[in-house]
Length: 328
Length: 236
Image 1: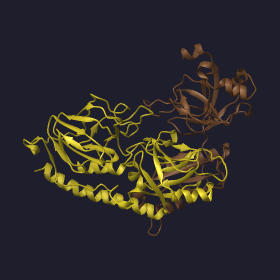
Image 2 (image 1 turned 45 degrees about the vertical axis):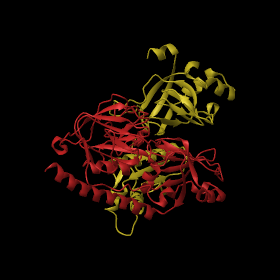
Image 3 (image 1 turned 45 degrees about the horizontal axis):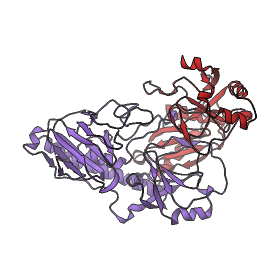
Image 4 (image 1 turned 180 degrees about the vertical axis):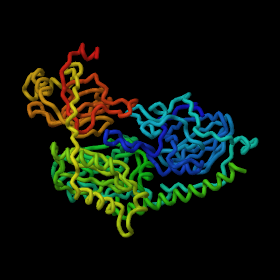
């Protein structure tokens, strides 16, 4: 497939690059890993196959061969050859189809998976784009106009479409985020430096809503609220941080570290967003308000395990349907 | 050589990592313990472990919640299960690996063009720029950890005569820039916003994605800086 119009920041991402944090190389990977996995499931890929992570305005794609695609995460109102196509459904597109995205219906990041996977070399065992290092993904950079991406395991799909330009297959998955009233609530676990903030700041942490500012990207979200303060100014020597770590900056504001976070840091770690809510966090955008609520280790683990089990069940179900279709 | 277990504290870093903290200090002996544990865990990983992040005085073990949950006994959280295994590991003496033996020489041009904060630092510390260079190059530094950016090395400790706090606001820093923050010294392998006081630049590539091991430095090695001229820098 070919990029016929570049998006604002569209990169190739997978589940991340692990085993190199001791050298300062952060894992990166999709911001919303849950959605990236859903897109892969819909087209019959492995869960950790590379996908394209898109921000709005997103790229436009030209398919040089019939392809089986799916998008998940944010709803950017997609069309194939001008006709609307649904999210979270596998879609067969014919040769010479054009896929475009028109507006943000909801969410912040959309994922495009292609049956057979994106063909590009892995760097340190991952196809995730590491923008800072200029490595991984598509030449270590965001996608640009005229980039050509091949498929790793192309499958001949010509016979499935007949004369149709595209067809959404009759199965789908749920989005798992942002649909209910609890969407604006982010569950966190206390951080090691939680007790460095004053009692009043602790109350504020739970009582006020936090605004995601424009200074928010794949590295982290800068939040805006009434400033929080620390009891002491005890220096923390640099130590590990992770996806979801909530740090208190010297100006009293918080930052939530996201996929491209640095590996270590010295600011007080007041909390950590639970893994099961990373997806929800990744779909929030500047201007959104949310609240923090504490949970415990056990609940955090259970929620994540449930999410993972759900994915595996979907994977089995989709694989069954897809095998049926491709072998008929 | 075996050694006694230093006192430590274990705490969760969210729901998918656990940190063993030996005391929130910059100390050679403690950092050696951290690295010894890093090598031990790399050679013999815990069940469910993804990787570890060694730092100054702590090491963090990242684990896979879902896969570990299938191996843990019922009634325990994954965190408890991982922590118990770590406590057990820490009961056994960790063989110390001699990591400090490797000496790496890094040429640095301390001339004005590459050292935007040199004049300010010298002024604040009431010494000449030549003295800053002399002091900075007259001792060897231990690389305590890599972090922040791919290949960014945290080295120490610089003489009090040239120690200076980092800037309050980060500025754009060129790749190869050598900085000082407090008693730490380090090199930015990539261009990046940063707050360290920049006093020079190395022509060496500290990060190279093409290489099997993409970073020039690793925790535990010793670094000696040598001063080079602008001419030498450009022809390096």
